[in-house]
Image 1 (cartoon, rainbow, N blue to C red):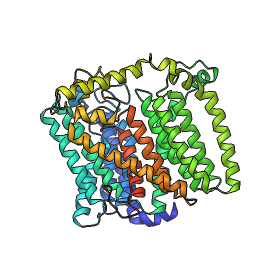
Image 2: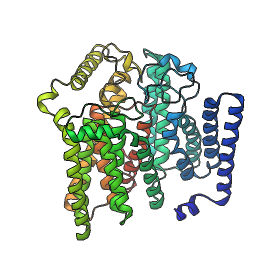
Image 3: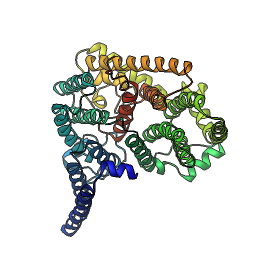
Image 4: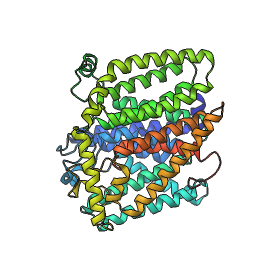
Length: 478
């Protein structure tokens, strides 16, 4: 931490951050005196992040570190809610949707990270013009084209306002993705960012774990899927899966006792997935973690193998006692064909393809899946590619297919290289595991572009892209 402080934060910048923090409390106090504390706190928190982002704008890495905590905190800050009240009832992270100044995530809202991503856009344009950001130029063109075609759906959207804001969130989140893509390469910075993300994820999903859920799992009478502060159980499971993969990565990078801390975090996050009962989250996490652990063991010394063996036995016992109910009830082949969640996905996919065949050049609009007649009242198709086809049209769909094929090709070539080599790069291995995880998740689920899950995924994806494509100084298109 000291080396990070000395490298990225001077004493003058530290004083400016303290000034921003004092200003935050002053604005909060003024708001309280004026009588609207809740809205005042939101504006004060936004002011703090904006000021902190502005004073760090000359240091991209520090500016991005300021951005990170805005992702979970944005779920507690939504401005101009009365304007967006017409969107009540759609998928949200918490069900409190009718408050005049709603505290939690709403579709099409303006969050803290919305404003900070706009500042990142300004910084990105400056750095690109100044040739300070010169990596992945072809990818930048690809992202611009993808965003443009999504914005064009506003003109044919069933709800143009929603399509506009979802396209805006997509554009700004991809700005953040490209911005972060330029920053990887410093080992200490990378470890700090990944560690910070894991801690943020742990704090975000920890309340999913509750005593009643654990008791039911242990007794084999699991009935309720815990969701914590989220409105549904799948989002915290997906977030926990990301945290598990990278906790294992840091666990094998660090020495004892720090490594044990990250293995422990992985265990807690696995418990989160069990409490949510998410099939997709569990299968994707197990598959990605298995790939990572299978190859990482080739590089371990004997004393580490003993530690790993003990950890595997412990995880196996916990998984059997807590996870068997999920497997018995939600992954039972005899019950799957009668599961309404599975059947609804099949219906969604069938309805989506039928709509596309009937209207091949009339997408419903980005974020408009809810409005089309075959949506079953759900906000997305539970498949990223199918969702793109219906909402954004053929060109974004084909662009996404191309990216998928590139990812599959990279996973295959790296796995072959890992099999042949005894010296495996941990960064490349965890990147392969994460891209596999992401593809599995997107096969049966979908993140809304205005959500925090989408942003967590993009940051981890930028790390993975930089490790798998950046080391050879080639572009993602190769």
